[in-house]
Length: 100
Length: 471
Image 1: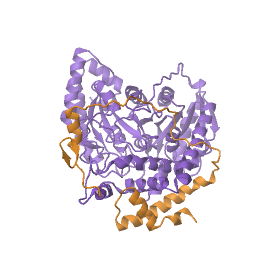
Image 2: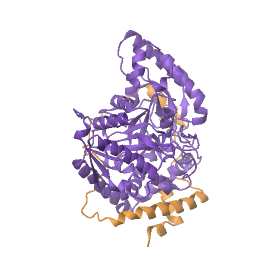
Image 3: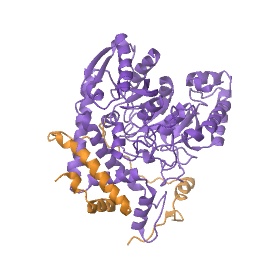
Image 4: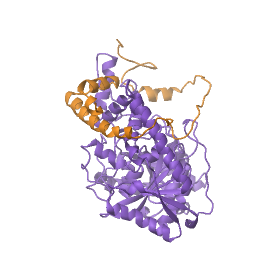
């Protein structure tokens, strides 16, 4: 089975749920066509044998840099500049809707 | 006095000699923006009073003769994916349309320490995803060289602002060509630094292993001055690196240049090839050793890039949840706020990339796509490492064609992706590359891409200055 045939409507809806994206009906159809085309193109990578190749996640070799986990207390001005951008707040907290 | 005909060093001399003040210089550019930007559309936000206040502070420093450097009082523009305290930072998205930057990006803080002046924030493709700036949700930007054409993208506003004479220099960011391709389309100089050369702190993340902040300007020297100011290790970006790389005695006779055959194959417009090859012939005449090389995995770079960049983007953009900042929609419960805020706040290209990235990372597909792409990335990186053992610089076109018409590719995502074919490998390999104007095709600018070893920006600047002087 070719990958582009696997991108059916249910797959698109499943991925949209994982990505927390609401898609309209026309958006879902367009997305299905676009993803099928792009993934069909990406299939080209299967021409290369990569069985003995190590993956690269970063172009430069990096080691983790650690620090002590000490709390930093921000100035009220910084807190304000962050919290005033929230749709809903209560005191120094973000306010959210019920979770379940 | 036409300030646009002067370089940063020349402007600096005039400021020091008090031929004009920093305020006059800033007012000149504010006037240019007022005159031209209605048509060009480079800026998303201009704050004349903020800029004038900074200019007056620069004048004070110039008066006292203290803490002066080449950028003191020089007006620049900042891509609207890079945070400048006191300005909004929208990434040209509805999601962040009203977002106020709470702090400076490190690159911006360094410019501020140099007393540079910020004229405003420039347009881009939403979240730096695109190749023409047409994917901005907030504004249309045109190419100052031909108003019917795109400025390139994603740093199209920055390129248009420089090319249109609406600032002296600009900052852009480059994930797959977003500094070099618009620089090429608008006929200016743009550098994508080595990964790690410039701090990414305060750059709104697109794909973290590929993103770099870089400088854009009219001349190589101007581009270098800005790069030298923003480069360096930053404790706020653990991927930034301390580096020192110096080339002494740069001579065209002592360098070796490689021409990758894969970059001159089918698809390139003949006039673009001629402009690039013409420049290479000039170098050969000056005694530079030129040889054909091969980067054998070139054709796999684009599919590799669209797996890696979208994977990283889907993770990076998970933070836009409608809770802490940005566009928020939905009433009933937390889940509906997530899906509706994201569904209505993001534009079509951003959603497409989040979907693609989520798909290739999802259970059952991770090995076939994401891991596969990471392995191909190793091969691409090895291509460059091997080539750069044989030669000091690799020269290629930046784009197979000059600036295309507005609307020409916007309906076809894959066609748009293909316009980045010569620039994306460089980000995957992490090497530095510059776009330098090298001629014209159908009266439109053509950019030459100069690639070198990691942290050999100094070598790229030297070669680019020499080429500039030959033209």
